[in-house]
Length: 95
Image (tube, rainbow, N blue to C red; front, top):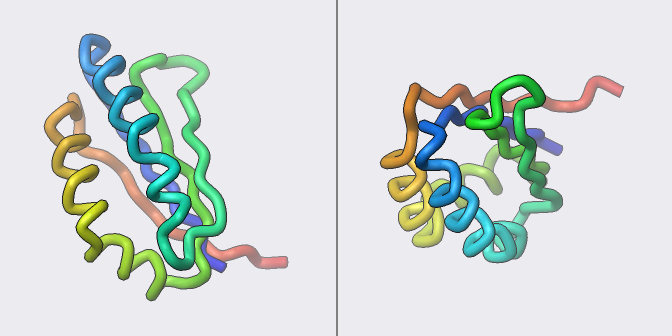
């Protein structure tokens, strides 16, 4: 299993647009082959910072999603709302 975390910073005025975009696409992301889990987190100290937390079967499943039509719609629309460069990383469970 691969766990993916993407930390995104938005201008406060862009948060409603991001939340609407996430709500419109979250179920379709969850239905992507190899996606096992998806959550959206909000930073406890900065309400304009959000993280997506997702589980994928493996790196190939995540890569396939990143090549999908859905990703091609969602990611560019999300990027337009950023106030800072996002931070993304993947990890695997140790135990």
